[in-house]
Figure 1 (cartoon, rainbow, N blue to C red):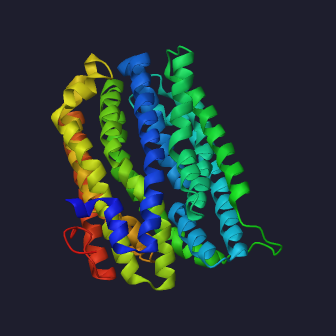
Figure 2: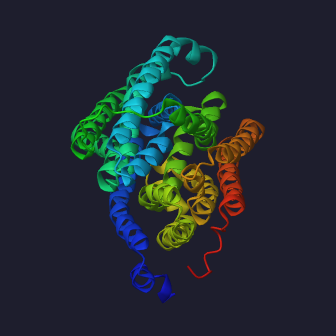
Figure 3: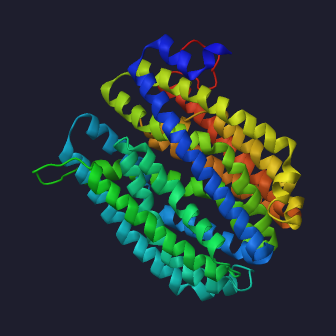
Length: 440
């Protein structure tokens, strides 16, 4: 067991890449713990303040905006991390600024178009598709968060490429839930529409913070920023499919509950899902430092370093996540009861979703390994299969079994796409991320 400790690993290996990842992961872990706490407390306070019915309207709007903002980002998330990290490692400032400007410009235009369509189709969607009374008023407000979410997310990814891990994660994961939480604690709010207004303001603040951090961190150059649009499109378009299918894996069950369920069903499922996803905070924290390292080492041809970094990251994830997973599996009713007495019935849903998230953690950074090394199409295939399984099982199970069926569909989808990722990494990069017992 002792050889698994990060300090002993770093001392034993004496590898600068490993030491950088360990130190960066520790910083990212601290920020992600803050983010996980803020997100959990925000969900908790929203549920307890609004009750299951109104909370369901807010959570459903949050899910829909998250999905549409991902579509509007065109798959640029990982592409920005990959190219900013790779070009920054080569001190190519014109390319770093060029890829940033093109990514932000493309996403701004598309997100405004998607927001306009959402506002235009608000009434027909609520009349013909969703069965949630009062959701049209909430969606009208939350639609304005769509371009803000898309842009603050891309600024966080660009900062991650520069290895500004702490500020990237603050922008991406901390500022919005923390701001909403603080307002809810200071000002009593009792409707989903009021919370939606606070959410839009919090997203604007996160975008401003991310933009200011980029301005301070970006390299300077006297040359005109430039980056080959064809190269960026070749990377982001396959990842656009990955992003869309990945969002379907995570949120399709919740969207289907909006069609066949009630606002209370949505609130119970959303609270259980967001609680289960707390287990993966370690995955996000380690990936924040590991992903740009994957891109840089692949660019430099250091495949042995890539393998060591990937296997070390899996060990770090398991060490940090296993106690949380066990706690959620042992005390699900108590955890869900924190949201309110009516939420305790979602305890079985939490247990099923936690098992799916554990597979996500145990398989390691397979998605980033593929996307950072040029295998975006293989990643897209894996996530597509997961999305098909998730949507198919959701259509089959949710009408009859409600939130329990949604949990099964989501857990199977998450686990399957990651296990396929293990197979692809082993086939294409030559190592198995599940083989954590092997010598690094």
